[in-house]
Length: 145
Image (cartoon, rainbow, N blue to C red):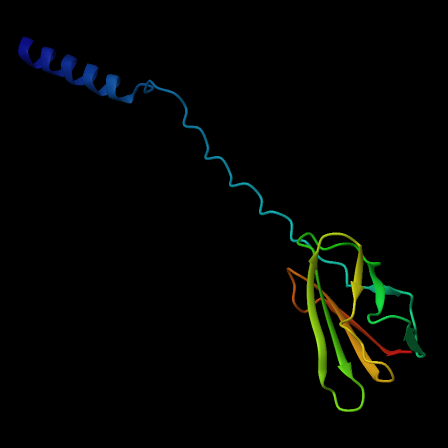
């Protein structure tokens, strides 16, 4: 009977020891991932020309015609691309083509060498370097006297 009592005592001690609170620390919950960076929404490209000939024909008194392209909208974070093409009005022959990449709002531009007495169409396309569909275009005519 002594053996039976010792066996029961050892069994009860083992059961009680296994039911007790386990040692160690409480697990730390996982750290959530950082939020995604905000998506930049670009303002639509808008610009002006100075001087702005509007619907009249600009006159060049020298071999080239100089003007300023000024961004009037907010500058895209990656900057702008300015494409200028000067073509003869009568047949569309390309005289000059330029591409200017810029991160400043005001940019001085000039055409290629203009022939006297010839009418030219100048196309100015300003676009975001990051978003190709964010673009604006202006055209005007110029002639050298």
